[in-house]
Length: 136
Image (cartoon, rainbow, N blue to C red; front, side, top):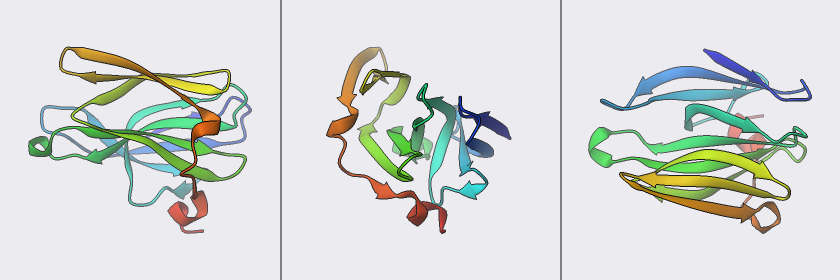
């Protein structure tokens, strides 16, 4: 179990080992401030926005070795208590996530190819209430 605390010390993410892809990385269930983010699994990675408003996680959408890697970058807005998944990436892994000004930047890797992406936070519109995810 790994716990990560926000820069302002107000929030905690707890990652609990769930399993691993055959010959691949481990995946975890996650709790935010003790409440589970239900029916989702994540890699052991998170990045807090420096002002602690948002946290980014690498979500695993498929975990079977025969299915290939399908991930998404998932953002949690802790001020609004909302969650957004951007984008789903087939056969690639998301890494090198960073917040820059009003954007989030990340890289997608597939075998030997790496692509850098940038999304403006204001352009994200598919937010869901986090309370729907935690069951509260």
